[in-house]
Image 1: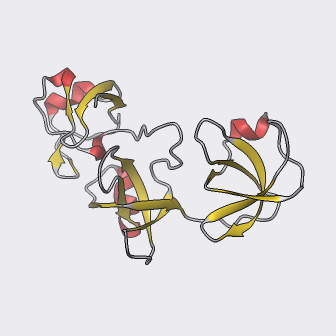
Image 2: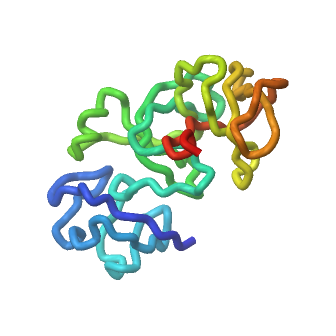
Length: 192
């Protein structure tokens, strides 16, 4: 499946990202959107499939309903194992069996500085629960086409409980409704 992804503009020639080294011939693609022909091998059409690209070389451009951004702290775990680990989110590989690419917390500085870092993929991933207080604003959804602005009420097992209200404005306190997906609102969303 073809998909347009943007190549990171901070890649350093000679530096290894994941299992491949970023070479001088790849440099002309920094900051540009390219066409990934195959999400498993990360080959791109624009270089005639010449170079070995890796997920770490791209800005994360996951689907619009995707709740994580590069560098955010997340909790990860694999199927059948409820032990959660805190990691730093790097990227997402659509269609992969283990689609969430992360670095260990101790590698965070290397990751931010663009130096070598070791990644691992995980089956499941969710944002680390921030220290939300009752009434803090959040964005919630069950269907990615319909996102709502609500106020945090409490955690309900794996779901977030929010005060429900009507319309597309910040909801008023009312009954508590559980949601499958959530994220913190952007600065722009808080201002509207």
